[in-house]
Length: 519
Ligand code: NAD
Image (cartoon, rainbow, N blue to C red; front, side, top):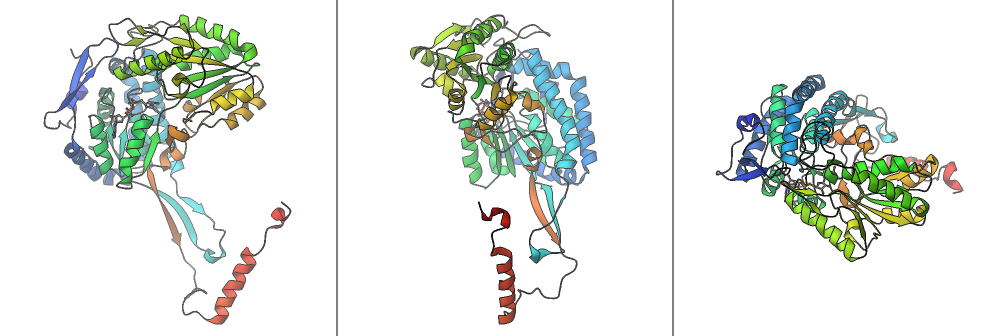
């Protein structure tokens, strides 16, 4: 039975591919919502061609004109927040708070941020050269849109990590073809409708619904791929993109560590661990996935985490404040969570709380706390992406750091201590794209800070200047006003001039600067 408002779906003009469709279900109830077109390569090519045509006029608009569309879209999101949150909740199974704060308002914030910052981050940069050979030339770095950007997104944030990545691409003057996850595609169709309502010109943003094959076909057609999803798929994306030398930006999985030192505010650390371990059902790329606690405060910290986790309510998300933990969005994820717990228990871990699939209807996994864990266990090394908190006892900060960095991932990380100097020192040694002291995840709200992963957590950045410059080609301009008829080094070569150029170069490069001589 269709429960989500389907106006947007019916309004979508994109059509299907030979009648092939796929099903979208509500994970919180098990109910069927709708079937949508599973677009093939031909349909994708058509969409990209339309987007390419529309891009030319869009790129010619001023930043202010594009910003006006984004601000109207922001207002549309706020005015339609109930409908959007309901759509996200129904196809994803997350709580109202997770939908409203992290999808609706985070994206509303991003619309305003990029509307304001695009012209700053993409302004022409005048540079001065160190080279005496180009004295007097005007040198400019400029950013121009790549053309059509393919945004491929995951199911855990159907708006923030799908449409959200389209915003800076659009502000930079690109058009976008958005391929949402087949698990949660309706939210993107709704945003397509919203952008049209906000006055985005026809075809500047189009949604290609479909499975992985639709995403793969998109890579062949676009000028850049912005991908958010699993590390496994990220590798496939990069492989496919290499065939056309299409640039990629990859926001992938994580196994984010939290370190709790003996002098930490344990109450704050425990609240943060439980919140950022369990929010969105633990289905956040940068959720707290593993915790290392110094021996003297281990028992107290574990007791606090158990008590706070026990108080969490889980079930079908309804109105504000109804439940803290929603459903497991994607069916195969249940097997992964169970496998990680089984593997840990087989190797000696203790399940302090939860550990099992919860009662339905709908698909739920009990909020779970594990102790006696170590790095021989998948739960400490592989992305679990569920409501699980494994907590490991460590001797000291050195051991904590060593374990925290013992990972192929490197997305976000955190350290809790009252000694800020020590905290920052440890944060700087964490091999992760972001590191927080006495906080976790909230760095994501500081959109000025670049966000991206090291290791197998990704390539490239979202947010900050890098988060929009990546959607552009860089063009270097040199404008020469005053110049002799012929530069000294030009043909024909003559002994005297060649020697002069050589002597000049020796003068320039033949010496170590005084400051470095004794080092
Ligand atoms: P996924 O990799 O299974 O799918 C992501 C998208 O890729 C979907 O739209 C899917 O249809 C598409 N896809 C699948 N195969 C493809 C192919 N061969 N070519 C092109 N596209 C293809 O990821 P998921 O399960 O939807 O999302 C969960 C993952 O996303 C987790 O690992 C999580 O950590 C990660 N994630 C990362 C961030 C971040 O910012 N780093 C944010 C959110 C989620």
